[in-house]
Amino acid sequence: MKTTKLYLHYISVTIQCMMQYKTSFLLTSIGQFLVSFNVFLGIFFMFQRFSKVEGFTYSEVLLCYAIILLEFALAEMTARGFDTFSGMVRSGEFDRILVRPQNEIVQVLGSKFELTRIGRIIQAVIMFAYGIMKSDAVWNFPKICTIVFMLIGGTAVFSALFLIYAALCFFTLDGLEFMNVFTDGAREFGKYPIGIYGKKILLFTTFIIPYALIQYYPILYILDRRSSILYMFLPLAACWFLIPAILLWKFGVRHYQSSGS
Image (cartoon, rainbow, N blue to C red; front, side, top):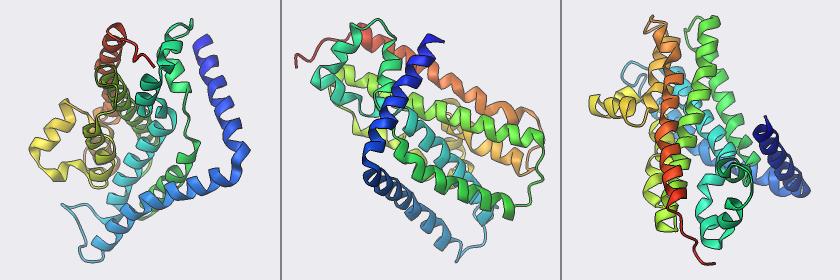
Protein backbone atom coordinates (compact mmCIF):
# COMPACT_ATOMS: atom_id res chain seq x y z
CA MET A 1 0.00 0.00 0.00
CA LYS A 2 2.84 2.35 0.89
CA THR A 3 4.59 1.52 -2.39
CA THR A 4 1.45 2.24 -4.42
CA LYS A 5 0.97 5.56 -2.63
CA LEU A 6 4.58 6.51 -3.39
CA TYR A 7 4.19 5.64 -7.07
CA LEU A 8 0.98 7.65 -7.35
CA HIS A 9 2.77 10.58 -5.72
CA TYR A 10 5.54 10.35 -8.34
CA ILE A 11 2.93 10.38 -11.12
CA SER A 12 1.13 13.35 -9.58
CA VAL A 13 4.35 15.38 -9.40
CA THR A 14 5.28 14.48 -12.99
CA ILE A 15 1.86 15.47 -14.36
CA GLN A 16 1.95 18.76 -12.48
CA CYS A 17 5.35 19.52 -14.03
CA MET A 18 4.10 18.66 -17.52
CA MET A 19 1.05 20.86 -17.12
CA GLN A 20 3.31 23.84 -16.54
CA TYR A 21 3.98 23.71 -20.29
CA LYS A 22 0.54 22.93 -21.72
CA THR A 23 1.38 23.92 -25.30
CA SER A 24 4.40 21.63 -25.35
CA PHE A 25 2.30 18.80 -23.90
CA LEU A 26 -0.42 19.30 -26.52
CA LEU A 27 1.99 19.44 -29.46
CA THR A 28 3.90 16.37 -28.26
CA SER A 29 0.65 14.44 -27.84
CA ILE A 30 -0.41 15.39 -31.37
CA GLY A 31 3.01 14.30 -32.62
CA GLN A 32 2.58 10.90 -30.97
CA PHE A 33 -0.80 10.57 -32.68
CA LEU A 34 0.65 11.39 -36.10
CA VAL A 35 3.64 9.04 -35.77
CA SER A 36 1.46 5.97 -35.32
CA PHE A 37 -1.07 7.35 -37.82
CA ASN A 38 1.45 6.57 -40.58
CA VAL A 39 1.13 2.88 -39.77
CA PHE A 40 -2.65 3.12 -39.98
CA LEU A 41 -2.33 4.69 -43.44
CA GLY A 42 -0.21 1.74 -44.54
CA ILE A 43 -2.98 -0.65 -43.48
CA PHE A 44 -5.65 1.52 -45.09
CA PHE A 45 -3.94 1.73 -48.49
CA MET A 46 -3.12 -1.97 -48.53
CA PHE A 47 -6.79 -2.84 -48.07
CA GLN A 48 -7.67 -0.58 -50.96
CA ARG A 49 -5.99 -3.26 -53.09
CA PHE A 50 -6.69 -6.45 -51.14
CA SER A 51 -9.92 -7.39 -49.41
CA LYS A 52 -8.40 -9.81 -46.88
CA VAL A 53 -5.06 -10.83 -45.35
CA GLU A 54 -4.94 -14.54 -44.54
CA GLY A 55 -8.71 -14.48 -44.03
CA PHE A 56 -8.75 -11.32 -41.86
CA THR A 57 -10.80 -8.37 -43.06
CA TYR A 58 -9.90 -4.68 -42.76
CA SER A 59 -11.92 -4.18 -39.58
CA GLU A 60 -10.44 -7.31 -37.99
CA VAL A 61 -6.89 -6.19 -38.79
CA LEU A 62 -7.68 -2.80 -37.25
CA LEU A 63 -8.72 -4.60 -34.07
CA CYS A 64 -5.36 -6.39 -34.01
CA TYR A 65 -3.37 -3.22 -34.54
CA ALA A 66 -5.46 -1.14 -32.15
CA ILE A 67 -5.03 -3.56 -29.27
CA ILE A 68 -1.25 -3.95 -29.73
CA LEU A 69 -0.85 -0.16 -30.06
CA LEU A 70 -2.93 0.43 -26.94
CA GLU A 71 -0.92 -2.11 -24.96
CA PHE A 72 2.36 -0.59 -26.12
CA ALA A 73 1.22 2.97 -25.39
CA LEU A 74 0.08 2.06 -21.87
CA ALA A 75 3.41 0.35 -21.15
CA GLU A 76 5.40 3.24 -22.62
CA MET A 77 3.37 5.71 -20.56
CA THR A 78 3.87 3.90 -17.25
CA ALA A 79 7.26 2.21 -17.74
CA ARG A 80 9.08 4.98 -19.61
CA GLY A 81 11.52 5.27 -16.70
CA PHE A 82 13.08 1.96 -17.73
CA ASP A 83 13.33 3.05 -21.36
CA THR A 84 15.45 6.06 -20.33
CA PHE A 85 17.32 4.20 -17.58
CA SER A 86 20.70 4.29 -19.34
CA GLY A 87 20.95 8.03 -18.73
CA MET A 88 20.21 7.47 -15.05
CA VAL A 89 23.11 5.00 -14.81
CA ARG A 90 25.57 7.20 -16.69
CA SER A 91 24.77 10.27 -14.60
CA GLY A 92 25.09 8.39 -11.31
CA GLU A 93 21.44 9.09 -10.41
CA PHE A 94 20.86 5.40 -9.78
CA ASP A 95 23.43 5.52 -6.96
CA ARG A 96 21.15 7.92 -5.11
CA ILE A 97 18.16 5.67 -5.74
CA LEU A 98 19.95 2.72 -4.13
CA VAL A 99 20.59 4.56 -0.87
CA ARG A 100 16.93 5.53 -0.47
CA PRO A 101 14.77 3.25 1.74
CA GLN A 102 12.32 2.50 -1.09
CA ASN A 103 12.02 -0.17 -3.76
CA GLU A 104 14.30 0.77 -6.66
CA ILE A 105 11.86 -0.52 -9.30
CA VAL A 106 9.13 1.81 -8.04
CA GLN A 107 11.54 4.75 -7.97
CA VAL A 108 12.67 4.16 -11.56
CA LEU A 109 9.06 3.65 -12.68
CA GLY A 110 8.04 6.91 -11.05
CA SER A 111 10.96 8.86 -12.49
CA LYS A 112 9.27 9.15 -15.89
CA PHE A 113 5.57 9.13 -16.68
CA GLU A 114 4.84 9.91 -20.34
CA LEU A 115 1.33 11.30 -20.34
CA THR A 116 1.94 12.52 -23.91
CA ARG A 117 1.37 8.92 -25.05
CA ILE A 118 -2.30 9.80 -24.70
CA GLY A 119 -2.07 10.69 -28.41
CA ARG A 120 -1.40 7.06 -29.33
CA ILE A 121 -4.02 5.85 -26.87
CA ILE A 122 -6.69 8.06 -28.44
CA GLN A 123 -5.83 6.77 -31.91
CA ALA A 124 -5.92 3.15 -30.71
CA VAL A 125 -9.31 3.65 -29.05
CA ILE A 126 -10.77 5.21 -32.22
CA MET A 127 -9.49 2.36 -34.39
CA PHE A 128 -10.72 -0.22 -31.93
CA ALA A 129 -14.19 1.34 -31.78
CA TYR A 130 -14.36 1.37 -35.58
CA GLY A 131 -13.19 -2.25 -35.75
CA ILE A 132 -15.85 -3.30 -33.25
CA MET A 133 -18.64 -1.56 -35.16
CA LYS A 134 -17.60 -3.04 -38.52
CA SER A 135 -16.73 -6.57 -37.41
CA ASP A 136 -19.24 -9.39 -37.08
CA ALA A 137 -18.22 -10.23 -33.51
CA VAL A 138 -21.08 -10.81 -31.08
CA TRP A 139 -20.11 -9.12 -27.85
CA ASN A 140 -20.79 -10.55 -24.41
CA PHE A 141 -19.32 -10.34 -20.92
CA PRO A 142 -16.52 -12.93 -21.46
CA LYS A 143 -15.32 -11.04 -24.54
CA ILE A 144 -15.30 -7.74 -22.67
CA CYS A 145 -13.23 -9.45 -19.96
CA THR A 146 -10.91 -10.72 -22.69
CA ILE A 147 -10.23 -7.15 -23.82
CA VAL A 148 -9.43 -6.12 -20.24
CA PHE A 149 -7.13 -9.12 -19.82
CA MET A 150 -5.40 -8.28 -23.12
CA LEU A 151 -4.64 -4.77 -21.87
CA ILE A 152 -3.30 -6.11 -18.56
CA GLY A 153 -1.20 -8.83 -20.18
CA GLY A 154 0.02 -6.62 -23.03
CA THR A 155 1.07 -3.82 -20.70
CA ALA A 156 2.90 -6.39 -18.57
CA VAL A 157 4.76 -7.88 -21.56
CA PHE A 158 5.94 -4.55 -22.96
CA SER A 159 6.83 -3.30 -19.48
CA ALA A 160 8.90 -6.45 -18.98
CA LEU A 161 10.76 -5.71 -22.24
CA PHE A 162 11.52 -2.18 -21.01
CA LEU A 163 12.71 -3.70 -17.72
CA ILE A 164 15.03 -6.09 -19.58
CA TYR A 165 16.37 -3.15 -21.59
CA ALA A 166 17.09 -1.30 -18.34
CA ALA A 167 18.70 -4.35 -16.71
CA LEU A 168 21.14 -4.70 -19.61
CA CYS A 169 22.33 -1.14 -18.91
CA PHE A 170 23.98 -2.43 -15.72
CA PHE A 171 26.48 -4.26 -17.91
CA THR A 172 26.80 -1.90 -20.87
CA LEU A 173 26.15 1.58 -19.32
CA ASP A 174 24.20 2.34 -22.47
CA GLY A 175 21.01 1.02 -23.97
CA LEU A 176 21.24 -1.72 -26.58
CA GLU A 177 19.44 -0.64 -29.73
CA PHE A 178 18.61 -4.22 -30.72
CA MET A 179 15.97 -4.20 -27.94
CA ASN A 180 13.93 -1.88 -30.15
CA VAL A 181 13.27 -4.92 -32.35
CA PHE A 182 11.20 -6.35 -29.50
CA THR A 183 9.42 -3.11 -28.52
CA ASP A 184 8.94 -0.76 -31.47
CA GLY A 185 9.35 -3.71 -33.84
CA ALA A 186 6.59 -5.65 -32.09
CA ARG A 187 4.30 -2.66 -32.44
CA GLU A 188 5.03 -2.60 -36.16
CA PHE A 189 4.53 -6.27 -37.01
CA GLY A 190 1.65 -6.41 -34.52
CA LYS A 191 -0.41 -4.33 -36.93
CA TYR A 192 -1.43 -7.65 -38.50
CA PRO A 193 -2.51 -10.88 -36.78
CA ILE A 194 0.71 -12.54 -35.63
CA GLY A 195 -0.40 -15.90 -36.98
CA ILE A 196 0.07 -14.73 -40.59
CA TYR A 197 3.87 -14.65 -40.21
CA GLY A 198 4.21 -18.41 -40.16
CA LYS A 199 4.41 -21.27 -37.69
CA LYS A 200 7.94 -20.57 -36.42
CA ILE A 201 7.15 -16.95 -35.59
CA LEU A 202 3.92 -18.04 -33.93
CA LEU A 203 5.78 -20.57 -31.76
CA PHE A 204 8.38 -17.93 -30.81
CA THR A 205 5.68 -15.41 -29.89
CA THR A 206 3.81 -18.01 -27.88
CA PHE A 207 6.57 -19.54 -25.75
CA ILE A 208 9.52 -17.11 -25.81
CA ILE A 209 8.18 -13.53 -25.98
CA PRO A 210 4.40 -13.98 -25.66
CA TYR A 211 3.07 -11.42 -28.14
CA ALA A 212 0.63 -13.97 -29.55
CA LEU A 213 -0.93 -14.44 -26.12
CA ILE A 214 -1.79 -10.74 -25.92
CA GLN A 215 -3.00 -10.33 -29.49
CA TYR A 216 -3.50 -13.28 -31.84
CA TYR A 217 -5.15 -15.99 -29.72
CA PRO A 218 -7.59 -13.73 -27.82
CA ILE A 219 -8.54 -12.00 -31.08
CA LEU A 220 -9.47 -15.41 -32.49
CA TYR A 221 -11.78 -15.89 -29.51
CA ILE A 222 -13.31 -12.43 -29.87
CA LEU A 223 -13.97 -13.03 -33.58
CA ASP A 224 -15.60 -16.41 -32.78
CA ARG A 225 -12.89 -18.36 -34.60
CA ARG A 226 -12.16 -20.23 -31.38
CA SER A 227 -14.78 -21.17 -28.82
CA SER A 228 -12.70 -22.41 -25.88
CA ILE A 229 -12.95 -20.17 -22.81
CA LEU A 230 -9.22 -20.86 -22.31
CA TYR A 231 -8.42 -18.23 -24.94
CA MET A 232 -10.00 -15.62 -22.68
CA PHE A 233 -7.32 -16.14 -20.01
CA LEU A 234 -4.26 -16.51 -22.26
CA PRO A 235 -3.39 -12.77 -22.01
CA LEU A 236 -3.09 -13.11 -18.23
CA ALA A 237 -0.79 -16.09 -18.74
CA ALA A 238 1.55 -13.74 -20.65
CA CYS A 239 2.31 -11.98 -17.36
CA TRP A 240 4.80 -14.80 -16.65
CA PHE A 241 7.22 -12.83 -18.82
CA LEU A 242 7.64 -10.38 -15.95
CA ILE A 243 9.36 -13.07 -13.87
CA PRO A 244 12.58 -13.45 -15.94
CA ALA A 245 12.63 -9.67 -16.47
CA ILE A 246 12.54 -8.99 -12.71
CA LEU A 247 15.13 -11.72 -12.05
CA LEU A 248 17.47 -10.17 -14.63
CA TRP A 249 16.94 -6.76 -13.03
CA LYS A 250 17.75 -8.09 -9.55
CA PHE A 251 20.84 -9.83 -10.94
CA GLY A 252 21.94 -6.54 -12.49
CA VAL A 253 21.37 -4.61 -9.25
CA ARG A 254 23.48 -7.12 -7.30
CA HIS A 255 26.34 -6.72 -9.78
CA TYR A 256 25.95 -2.99 -10.28
CA GLN A 257 29.08 -0.88 -10.02
CA SER A 258 28.81 2.89 -9.98
CA SER A 259 29.63 4.65 -13.25
CA GLY A 260 31.75 7.06 -11.23
CA SER A 261 29.88 10.15 -12.50
